[in-house]
Image (cartoon, rainbow, N blue to C red; front, side, top):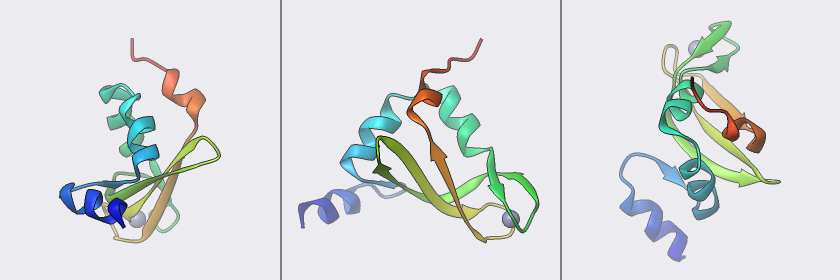
Length: 88
Ligand SMILES: [Zn+2]
């Protein structure tokens, strides 16, 4: 599949083309905030997501990866409405 070839070119983060478009529309400051505020059930709070991938589902962006602290699998749904937020 072409999609896999595209993913291989992206050494760090693996996003589907749809997810890439959605993520690209998020201001970088908001991207950082989202990545640093993923809930981990094991750590019991907000953690930074690492080794994450992105996909699109029903117009929302789903980030799936691992907790930066304990390594447990975590996921974060980024709603499209959330993408319109801008930092002050
Ligand atoms: Zn954790």
